[in-house]
Image 1: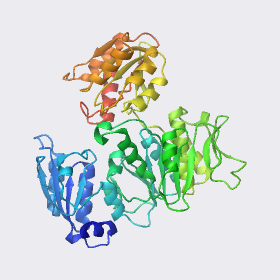
Image 2 (image 1 turned 180 degrees about the vertical axis):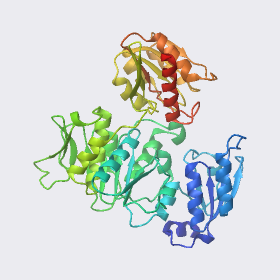
Image 3 (image 1 turned 135 degrees about the vertical axis):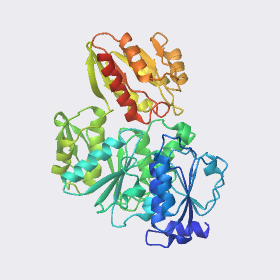
Image 4 (image 1 turned 120 degrees about the horizontal axis):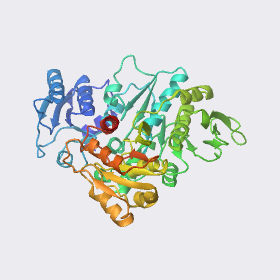
Length: 481
Protein backbone atom coordinates (compact mmCIF):
# COMPACT_ATOMS: atom_id res chain seq x y z
CA UNK A 1 0.00 0.00 0.00
CA UNK A 2 1.37 3.42 -0.98
CA UNK A 3 1.79 6.20 1.55
CA UNK A 4 -1.16 8.08 0.03
CA UNK A 5 -3.40 4.99 0.13
CA UNK A 6 -2.44 4.32 3.76
CA UNK A 7 -3.16 7.94 4.66
CA UNK A 8 -6.56 7.86 2.95
CA UNK A 9 -7.55 4.61 4.68
CA UNK A 10 -7.09 6.31 8.06
CA UNK A 11 -8.37 9.79 7.14
CA UNK A 12 -11.53 11.43 8.43
CA UNK A 13 -13.10 14.89 8.14
CA UNK A 14 -10.75 16.34 10.76
CA UNK A 15 -7.65 15.28 8.80
CA UNK A 16 -5.60 17.71 6.72
CA UNK A 17 -6.67 16.88 3.16
CA UNK A 18 -4.76 19.77 1.55
CA UNK A 19 -2.08 17.42 0.28
CA UNK A 20 -4.55 15.09 -1.44
CA UNK A 21 -5.15 15.33 -5.19
CA UNK A 22 -8.54 13.81 -6.08
CA UNK A 23 -10.36 13.22 -9.36
CA UNK A 24 -14.13 12.87 -9.48
CA UNK A 25 -15.33 11.11 -12.64
CA UNK A 26 -18.87 12.12 -13.56
CA UNK A 27 -20.87 15.21 -12.70
CA UNK A 28 -24.22 13.69 -11.84
CA UNK A 29 -25.75 14.24 -8.40
CA UNK A 30 -23.39 11.77 -6.72
CA UNK A 31 -20.32 13.17 -8.49
CA UNK A 32 -21.26 16.72 -7.57
CA UNK A 33 -21.75 15.70 -3.94
CA UNK A 34 -18.40 13.89 -3.85
CA UNK A 35 -16.53 16.82 -5.35
CA UNK A 36 -18.19 19.25 -2.95
CA UNK A 37 -17.36 17.01 0.03
CA UNK A 38 -13.69 16.83 -0.99
CA UNK A 39 -13.54 20.60 -1.43
CA UNK A 40 -15.09 21.08 2.02
CA UNK A 41 -12.21 19.21 3.65
CA UNK A 42 -9.56 20.99 1.58
CA UNK A 43 -8.56 18.46 -1.09
CA UNK A 44 -7.43 19.53 -4.56
CA UNK A 45 -10.21 18.41 -6.89
CA UNK A 46 -10.46 17.77 -10.62
CA UNK A 47 -13.83 16.80 -12.14
CA UNK A 48 -14.24 14.94 -15.43
CA UNK A 49 -17.57 14.80 -17.26
CA UNK A 50 -17.86 13.13 -20.66
CA UNK A 51 -21.06 14.90 -21.61
CA UNK A 52 -20.78 18.25 -23.32
CA UNK A 53 -23.90 20.21 -22.34
CA UNK A 54 -26.19 21.50 -25.06
CA UNK A 55 -27.70 24.95 -25.05
CA UNK A 56 -30.78 23.76 -23.13
CA UNK A 57 -28.87 21.62 -20.62
CA UNK A 58 -27.90 24.02 -17.88
CA UNK A 59 -27.67 21.53 -14.98
CA UNK A 60 -24.12 20.46 -15.80
CA UNK A 61 -23.09 24.04 -16.43
CA UNK A 62 -24.47 25.19 -13.07
CA UNK A 63 -22.76 22.34 -11.24
CA UNK A 64 -19.49 23.07 -13.02
CA UNK A 65 -19.76 26.78 -12.20
CA UNK A 66 -20.41 26.07 -8.50
CA UNK A 67 -17.49 23.67 -8.21
CA UNK A 68 -15.24 26.00 -10.17
CA UNK A 69 -16.10 28.85 -7.81
CA UNK A 70 -15.20 26.58 -4.87
CA UNK A 71 -11.81 25.84 -6.39
CA UNK A 72 -12.23 22.69 -8.46
CA UNK A 73 -10.93 22.23 -11.99
CA UNK A 74 -13.84 20.99 -14.14
CA UNK A 75 -13.57 19.46 -17.63
CA UNK A 76 -16.87 19.11 -19.50
CA UNK A 77 -16.80 16.95 -22.61
CA UNK A 78 -13.69 15.17 -21.35
CA UNK A 79 -12.50 12.43 -23.75
CA UNK A 80 -11.98 8.80 -22.74
CA UNK A 81 -8.21 9.02 -23.05
CA UNK A 82 -7.80 11.64 -20.33
CA UNK A 83 -5.17 10.50 -17.83
CA UNK A 84 -6.31 10.15 -14.21
CA UNK A 85 -3.44 10.57 -11.77
CA UNK A 86 -3.12 11.77 -8.18
CA UNK A 87 -4.09 10.14 -4.91
CA UNK A 88 -7.82 9.38 -5.17
CA UNK A 89 -10.36 8.59 -7.89
CA UNK A 90 -14.10 8.75 -7.11
CA UNK A 91 -16.02 7.43 -10.14
CA UNK A 92 -19.72 7.91 -10.81
CA UNK A 93 -21.79 4.77 -10.04
CA UNK A 94 -22.74 4.67 -13.71
CA UNK A 95 -19.15 4.20 -14.90
CA UNK A 96 -18.28 0.55 -15.39
CA UNK A 97 -15.00 -0.72 -13.91
CA UNK A 98 -13.86 -1.20 -17.52
CA UNK A 99 -14.23 2.51 -18.36
CA UNK A 100 -10.92 3.95 -19.59
CA UNK A 101 -10.81 6.58 -16.85
CA UNK A 102 -10.85 3.79 -14.26
CA UNK A 103 -8.70 1.25 -16.11
CA UNK A 104 -5.98 3.77 -16.94
CA UNK A 105 -6.07 5.57 -13.62
CA UNK A 106 -2.81 5.74 -11.74
CA UNK A 107 -4.51 7.16 -8.66
CA UNK A 108 -3.47 5.33 -5.51
CA UNK A 109 -7.03 4.63 -4.38
CA UNK A 110 -10.46 4.28 -5.99
CA UNK A 111 -13.49 4.92 -3.80
CA UNK A 112 -17.21 5.16 -4.33
CA UNK A 113 -18.98 8.26 -3.11
CA UNK A 114 -20.31 6.12 -0.26
CA UNK A 115 -16.80 5.10 0.82
CA UNK A 116 -15.80 8.77 0.75
CA UNK A 117 -18.84 9.59 2.86
CA UNK A 118 -17.92 6.82 5.31
CA UNK A 119 -14.45 8.32 5.75
CA UNK A 120 -15.90 11.81 6.26
CA UNK A 121 -18.94 10.80 8.32
CA UNK A 122 -19.82 12.11 11.75
CA UNK A 123 -18.45 9.16 13.72
CA UNK A 124 -21.27 9.28 16.26
CA UNK A 125 -23.99 8.63 13.64
CA UNK A 126 -24.68 4.93 12.92
CA UNK A 127 -25.46 3.56 9.44
CA UNK A 128 -28.12 0.96 8.68
CA UNK A 129 -27.48 -0.33 5.15
CA UNK A 130 -29.76 -2.12 2.68
CA UNK A 131 -29.09 -3.77 -0.67
CA UNK A 132 -30.68 -6.42 -2.88
CA UNK A 133 -31.75 -6.88 -6.47
CA UNK A 134 -35.27 -5.71 -5.63
CA UNK A 135 -37.07 -4.04 -2.74
CA UNK A 136 -34.25 -1.77 -1.54
CA UNK A 137 -36.15 1.50 -1.70
CA UNK A 138 -39.32 0.14 -0.10
CA UNK A 139 -37.32 -1.45 2.73
CA UNK A 140 -35.32 1.72 3.39
CA UNK A 141 -38.50 3.80 3.47
CA UNK A 142 -40.13 1.31 5.85
CA UNK A 143 -37.15 1.41 8.20
CA UNK A 144 -37.28 5.20 8.10
CA UNK A 145 -41.01 5.15 8.97
CA UNK A 146 -40.50 2.68 11.82
CA UNK A 147 -37.65 4.66 13.37
CA UNK A 148 -39.65 7.88 13.11
CA UNK A 149 -42.53 6.11 14.87
CA UNK A 150 -40.00 5.29 17.61
CA UNK A 151 -39.33 9.00 18.08
CA UNK A 152 -35.94 8.96 16.35
CA UNK A 153 -34.62 11.29 13.64
CA UNK A 154 -33.37 9.11 10.76
CA UNK A 155 -32.29 10.20 7.30
CA UNK A 156 -32.85 7.88 4.32
CA UNK A 157 -30.12 8.51 1.74
CA UNK A 158 -27.62 6.91 -0.63
CA UNK A 159 -29.22 5.36 -3.70
CA UNK A 160 -32.44 7.03 -2.52
CA UNK A 161 -32.69 10.76 -1.83
CA UNK A 162 -29.47 12.62 -1.06
CA UNK A 163 -26.12 11.10 -2.07
CA UNK A 164 -24.30 10.05 1.09
CA UNK A 165 -21.44 12.49 0.42
CA UNK A 166 -24.04 15.25 0.78
CA UNK A 167 -26.13 13.65 3.53
CA UNK A 168 -23.23 13.53 5.98
CA UNK A 169 -23.10 17.34 6.02
CA UNK A 170 -26.84 17.89 6.65
CA UNK A 171 -27.55 20.16 9.64
CA UNK A 172 -28.94 19.35 12.10
CA UNK A 173 -27.55 15.88 11.56
CA UNK A 174 -29.77 12.80 11.88
CA UNK A 175 -29.53 10.29 14.70
CA UNK A 176 -29.11 7.45 12.21
CA UNK A 177 -28.57 7.08 8.46
CA UNK A 178 -30.68 4.51 6.62
CA UNK A 179 -28.62 3.89 3.49
CA UNK A 180 -29.74 2.27 0.24
CA UNK A 181 -26.76 0.80 -1.61
CA UNK A 182 -26.63 -0.43 -5.20
CA UNK A 183 -24.15 -3.02 -6.44
CA UNK A 184 -22.40 -0.21 -8.35
CA UNK A 185 -21.83 1.72 -5.13
CA UNK A 186 -20.70 -1.34 -3.19
CA UNK A 187 -18.09 -2.27 -5.81
CA UNK A 188 -15.72 0.50 -4.74
CA UNK A 189 -16.67 0.50 -1.04
CA UNK A 190 -13.98 -1.53 0.74
CA UNK A 191 -14.30 -0.66 4.42
CA UNK A 192 -17.82 0.46 5.36
CA UNK A 193 -18.79 -0.99 8.76
CA UNK A 194 -22.53 -0.54 9.32
CA UNK A 195 -24.25 -0.95 12.65
CA UNK A 196 -26.73 -3.28 10.91
CA UNK A 197 -27.05 -4.36 7.29
CA UNK A 198 -29.57 -6.20 5.14
CA UNK A 199 -29.33 -8.23 1.92
CA UNK A 200 -32.86 -8.75 0.59
CA UNK A 201 -32.45 -11.03 -2.43
CA UNK A 202 -30.19 -11.75 -5.38
CA UNK A 203 -31.18 -12.38 -8.98
CA UNK A 204 -29.18 -11.76 -12.16
CA UNK A 205 -29.01 -8.03 -12.86
CA UNK A 206 -26.53 -5.45 -14.16
CA UNK A 207 -24.39 -8.23 -15.64
CA UNK A 208 -23.22 -5.85 -18.36
CA UNK A 209 -21.71 -3.64 -15.63
CA UNK A 210 -20.25 -6.37 -13.40
CA UNK A 211 -19.21 -8.76 -16.15
CA UNK A 212 -20.65 -11.89 -14.54
CA UNK A 213 -23.15 -13.08 -11.96
CA UNK A 214 -20.25 -14.10 -9.72
CA UNK A 215 -18.94 -10.54 -9.63
CA UNK A 216 -22.44 -9.13 -9.08
CA UNK A 217 -22.99 -11.45 -6.11
CA UNK A 218 -19.56 -10.59 -4.71
CA UNK A 219 -20.33 -6.87 -4.81
CA UNK A 220 -23.77 -7.34 -3.22
CA UNK A 221 -22.21 -9.37 -0.39
CA UNK A 222 -20.01 -6.41 0.55
CA UNK A 223 -22.98 -4.96 2.43
CA UNK A 224 -22.36 -7.48 5.23
CA UNK A 225 -18.62 -6.88 5.64
CA UNK A 226 -17.63 -5.39 8.96
CA UNK A 227 -21.22 -5.14 10.23
CA UNK A 228 -21.19 -4.52 13.96
CA UNK A 229 -24.48 -5.64 15.52
CA UNK A 230 -26.79 -7.49 13.10
CA UNK A 231 -26.89 -8.75 9.54
CA UNK A 232 -30.39 -9.29 8.17
CA UNK A 233 -30.72 -11.93 5.45
CA UNK A 234 -33.44 -13.57 3.35
CA UNK A 235 -33.88 -17.10 4.68
CA UNK A 236 -35.98 -17.95 1.61
CA UNK A 237 -33.11 -17.14 -0.78
CA UNK A 238 -30.46 -19.84 -0.37
CA UNK A 239 -27.78 -17.78 -2.10
CA UNK A 240 -28.34 -14.90 0.33
CA UNK A 241 -28.34 -17.27 3.30
CA UNK A 242 -24.97 -18.69 2.20
CA UNK A 243 -23.55 -15.18 1.94
CA UNK A 244 -24.77 -14.47 5.47
CA UNK A 245 -23.12 -17.65 6.72
CA UNK A 246 -19.81 -16.60 5.14
CA UNK A 247 -19.99 -12.90 6.10
CA UNK A 248 -16.90 -11.34 7.67
CA UNK A 249 -18.47 -9.36 10.51
CA UNK A 250 -17.43 -7.90 13.84
CA UNK A 251 -17.30 -10.50 16.60
CA UNK A 252 -20.63 -10.71 18.40
CA UNK A 253 -22.68 -9.57 15.40
CA UNK A 254 -25.98 -11.46 15.13
CA UNK A 255 -27.52 -13.01 11.99
CA UNK A 256 -31.27 -12.38 11.73
CA UNK A 257 -33.25 -14.18 9.04
CA UNK A 258 -36.59 -13.17 7.58
CA UNK A 259 -39.05 -15.52 5.89
CA UNK A 260 -42.58 -15.64 4.55
CA UNK A 261 -42.89 -18.91 6.43
CA UNK A 262 -42.91 -19.74 10.13
CA UNK A 263 -39.72 -18.31 11.64
CA UNK A 264 -37.12 -20.28 13.48
CA UNK A 265 -35.35 -18.83 16.51
CA UNK A 266 -33.50 -15.55 15.72
CA UNK A 267 -35.77 -14.87 12.75
CA UNK A 268 -38.84 -12.84 11.85
CA UNK A 269 -41.60 -14.37 9.77
CA UNK A 270 -45.29 -15.05 9.34
CA UNK A 271 -47.65 -17.14 11.47
CA UNK A 272 -51.35 -17.39 10.59
CA UNK A 273 -51.29 -14.18 8.55
CA UNK A 274 -49.41 -12.16 11.19
CA UNK A 275 -45.85 -10.85 11.01
CA UNK A 276 -44.00 -12.01 14.13
CA UNK A 277 -40.63 -11.44 15.78
CA UNK A 278 -38.73 -14.41 17.19
CA UNK A 279 -35.38 -12.66 17.26
CA UNK A 280 -35.48 -9.65 19.57
CA UNK A 281 -37.30 -11.08 22.57
CA UNK A 282 -35.79 -12.82 25.59
CA UNK A 283 -38.02 -15.91 25.28
CA UNK A 284 -37.31 -16.44 21.58
CA UNK A 285 -36.49 -20.13 22.09
CA UNK A 286 -40.19 -20.84 22.62
CA UNK A 287 -42.22 -17.71 21.81
CA UNK A 288 -42.74 -14.97 19.21
CA UNK A 289 -44.22 -11.49 19.53
CA UNK A 290 -46.83 -10.22 17.07
CA UNK A 291 -45.81 -7.23 14.96
CA UNK A 292 -48.69 -6.57 12.55
CA UNK A 293 -51.37 -8.49 10.67
CA UNK A 294 -50.91 -8.74 6.91
CA UNK A 295 -54.57 -7.81 6.37
CA UNK A 296 -53.94 -4.50 8.17
CA UNK A 297 -51.05 -3.44 5.93
CA UNK A 298 -51.73 -0.85 3.23
CA UNK A 299 -50.23 -3.35 0.76
CA UNK A 300 -50.25 -7.01 1.74
CA UNK A 301 -48.64 -8.35 -1.44
CA UNK A 302 -45.80 -10.86 -0.86
CA UNK A 303 -43.02 -8.49 -2.04
CA UNK A 304 -44.12 -5.75 0.37
CA UNK A 305 -44.61 -8.24 3.21
CA UNK A 306 -41.07 -9.48 2.62
CA UNK A 307 -39.70 -5.94 2.65
CA UNK A 308 -41.68 -5.19 5.82
CA UNK A 309 -40.13 -8.19 7.56
CA UNK A 310 -36.63 -7.10 6.56
CA UNK A 311 -37.33 -3.54 7.70
CA UNK A 312 -38.75 -4.79 10.99
CA UNK A 313 -35.59 -6.80 11.64
CA UNK A 314 -33.38 -3.77 10.93
CA UNK A 315 -35.49 -1.43 13.02
CA UNK A 316 -35.66 -3.90 15.92
CA UNK A 317 -31.89 -4.40 15.73
CA UNK A 318 -31.56 -0.66 16.32
CA UNK A 319 -33.86 -0.79 19.35
CA UNK A 320 -37.24 0.18 17.86
CA UNK A 321 -40.08 -1.16 20.04
CA UNK A 322 -42.81 -3.40 18.65
CA UNK A 323 -45.32 -0.53 18.72
CA UNK A 324 -43.08 1.62 16.51
CA UNK A 325 -42.53 -1.20 14.02
CA UNK A 326 -46.29 -1.72 13.84
CA UNK A 327 -47.00 2.00 13.54
CA UNK A 328 -44.43 2.50 10.78
CA UNK A 329 -45.74 -0.48 8.82
CA UNK A 330 -49.37 0.63 9.08
CA UNK A 331 -48.64 4.21 8.03
CA UNK A 332 -46.37 3.35 5.13
CA UNK A 333 -47.46 4.00 1.54
CA UNK A 334 -45.70 2.22 -1.31
CA UNK A 335 -44.12 4.61 -3.81
CA UNK A 336 -45.58 5.15 -7.24
CA UNK A 337 -44.51 2.98 -10.19
CA UNK A 338 -44.50 -0.20 -8.12
CA UNK A 339 -47.73 -1.84 -9.17
CA UNK A 340 -50.31 0.92 -9.01
CA UNK A 341 -53.39 0.79 -11.22
CA UNK A 342 -53.35 4.13 -13.03
CA UNK A 343 -56.77 3.67 -14.69
CA UNK A 344 -59.35 1.20 -15.95
CA UNK A 345 -60.41 1.92 -19.55
CA UNK A 346 -63.07 -0.18 -21.30
CA UNK A 347 -62.82 -2.76 -18.48
CA UNK A 348 -59.07 -3.15 -18.98
CA UNK A 349 -56.79 -2.29 -16.04
CA UNK A 350 -53.57 -0.37 -16.76
CA UNK A 351 -50.90 -1.13 -14.14
CA UNK A 352 -47.65 0.81 -13.74
CA UNK A 353 -44.74 -1.25 -12.46
CA UNK A 354 -42.03 0.77 -14.16
CA UNK A 355 -39.77 0.05 -11.18
CA UNK A 356 -39.53 -3.58 -12.42
CA UNK A 357 -36.17 -2.93 -14.08
CA UNK A 358 -34.99 -6.56 -14.17
CA UNK A 359 -36.40 -10.01 -14.83
CA UNK A 360 -36.73 -10.84 -11.13
CA UNK A 361 -38.98 -7.84 -10.47
CA UNK A 362 -40.97 -8.40 -13.68
CA UNK A 363 -41.56 -12.00 -12.61
CA UNK A 364 -43.18 -10.80 -9.40
CA UNK A 365 -45.32 -8.25 -11.27
CA UNK A 366 -46.49 -10.78 -13.86
CA UNK A 367 -47.32 -13.32 -11.16
CA UNK A 368 -49.91 -10.92 -9.75
CA UNK A 369 -51.93 -10.92 -12.99
CA UNK A 370 -54.11 -13.44 -14.86
CA UNK A 371 -54.59 -12.39 -18.48
CA UNK A 372 -52.05 -9.72 -19.33
CA UNK A 373 -50.73 -7.65 -22.20
CA UNK A 374 -47.14 -7.05 -21.18
CA UNK A 375 -45.20 -3.89 -22.09
CA UNK A 376 -41.52 -4.76 -21.78
CA UNK A 377 -38.09 -3.64 -22.92
CA UNK A 378 -35.50 -0.90 -22.53
CA UNK A 379 -31.85 -1.41 -21.61
CA UNK A 380 -31.45 -5.15 -21.08
CA UNK A 381 -28.24 -4.87 -18.98
CA UNK A 382 -27.14 -8.32 -20.13
CA UNK A 383 -30.27 -9.92 -18.66
CA UNK A 384 -31.60 -13.37 -19.57
CA UNK A 385 -35.35 -13.51 -20.21
CA UNK A 386 -35.82 -17.17 -21.18
CA UNK A 387 -37.13 -18.44 -17.85
CA UNK A 388 -39.33 -15.35 -17.43
CA UNK A 389 -41.06 -15.87 -20.80
CA UNK A 390 -41.30 -19.62 -20.29
CA UNK A 391 -42.89 -19.23 -16.84
CA UNK A 392 -45.55 -16.71 -17.89
CA UNK A 393 -46.35 -17.62 -21.50
CA UNK A 394 -49.78 -19.04 -20.56
CA UNK A 395 -50.97 -15.78 -19.00
CA UNK A 396 -49.84 -13.53 -21.85
CA UNK A 397 -52.51 -12.15 -24.18
CA UNK A 398 -49.73 -10.38 -26.05
CA UNK A 399 -46.52 -8.43 -25.60
CA UNK A 400 -45.46 -4.97 -26.74
CA UNK A 401 -41.72 -4.28 -26.90
CA UNK A 402 -40.18 -0.85 -26.38
CA UNK A 403 -36.61 0.37 -26.05
CA UNK A 404 -33.31 -0.17 -27.80
CA UNK A 405 -32.50 -3.70 -26.55
CA UNK A 406 -35.48 -5.56 -27.95
CA UNK A 407 -33.61 -8.50 -29.44
CA UNK A 408 -32.97 -10.47 -26.19
CA UNK A 409 -36.70 -10.40 -25.38
CA UNK A 410 -37.68 -11.10 -28.96
CA UNK A 411 -35.39 -14.14 -29.04
CA UNK A 412 -36.82 -15.43 -25.75
CA UNK A 413 -40.31 -15.30 -27.26
CA UNK A 414 -39.16 -17.03 -30.44
CA UNK A 415 -37.74 -19.87 -28.39
CA UNK A 416 -40.39 -20.29 -25.71
CA UNK A 417 -43.63 -18.55 -26.72
CA UNK A 418 -43.81 -18.09 -30.50
CA UNK A 419 -47.60 -18.24 -30.32
CA UNK A 420 -47.86 -15.05 -28.23
CA UNK A 421 -48.69 -11.99 -30.40
CA UNK A 422 -45.76 -9.58 -30.33
CA UNK A 423 -45.72 -5.94 -31.41
CA UNK A 424 -42.45 -4.00 -31.49
CA UNK A 425 -42.44 -0.21 -31.17
CA UNK A 426 -39.47 1.10 -33.18
CA UNK A 427 -36.64 2.40 -31.01
CA UNK A 428 -36.77 5.72 -32.87
CA UNK A 429 -40.46 6.34 -32.16
CA UNK A 430 -40.88 9.94 -30.95
CA UNK A 431 -43.52 8.93 -28.37
CA UNK A 432 -42.78 5.26 -27.67
CA UNK A 433 -45.03 4.92 -24.63
CA UNK A 434 -48.11 6.32 -26.34
CA UNK A 435 -47.49 3.92 -29.23
CA UNK A 436 -46.99 1.03 -26.81
CA UNK A 437 -50.17 1.74 -24.84
CA UNK A 438 -52.16 2.06 -28.06
CA UNK A 439 -50.83 -1.28 -29.31
CA UNK A 440 -51.51 -2.92 -25.95
CA UNK A 441 -55.08 -1.61 -25.90
CA UNK A 442 -55.68 -3.19 -29.32
CA UNK A 443 -54.49 -6.58 -28.00
CA UNK A 444 -56.34 -6.48 -24.67
CA UNK A 445 -59.76 -8.01 -24.00
CA UNK A 446 -62.31 -7.19 -21.28
CA UNK A 447 -61.00 -7.82 -17.76
CA UNK A 448 -57.39 -8.08 -18.98
CA UNK A 449 -54.48 -6.15 -17.49
CA UNK A 450 -52.06 -4.04 -19.49
CA UNK A 451 -48.91 -4.24 -17.41
CA UNK A 452 -45.88 -1.99 -17.70
CA UNK A 453 -43.17 -4.14 -16.10
CA UNK A 454 -40.27 -3.65 -18.51
CA UNK A 455 -37.69 -6.04 -16.98
CA UNK A 456 -35.14 -3.52 -18.30
CA UNK A 457 -33.64 -0.19 -17.31
CA UNK A 458 -35.20 3.00 -18.64
CA UNK A 459 -32.34 5.31 -19.57
CA UNK A 460 -32.41 4.51 -23.28
CA UNK A 461 -35.64 6.46 -23.84
CA UNK A 462 -36.46 8.06 -20.47
CA UNK A 463 -34.62 9.93 -17.73
CA UNK A 464 -35.39 7.19 -15.21
CA UNK A 465 -38.08 4.64 -14.30
CA UNK A 466 -40.24 7.38 -12.77
CA UNK A 467 -40.31 9.30 -16.05
CA UNK A 468 -41.17 6.06 -17.83
CA UNK A 469 -44.04 5.46 -15.41
CA UNK A 470 -45.32 8.99 -15.83
CA UNK A 471 -45.22 8.57 -19.61
CA UNK A 472 -47.29 5.41 -19.21
CA UNK A 473 -49.91 7.21 -17.11
CA UNK A 474 -50.04 10.07 -19.61
CA UNK A 475 -50.47 7.62 -22.48
CA UNK A 476 -53.32 5.90 -20.64
CA UNK A 477 -54.96 9.27 -20.00
CA UNK A 478 -54.65 10.06 -23.71
CA UNK A 479 -56.24 6.69 -24.49
CA UNK A 480 -59.19 7.51 -22.26
CA UNK A 481 -59.65 10.89 -23.97
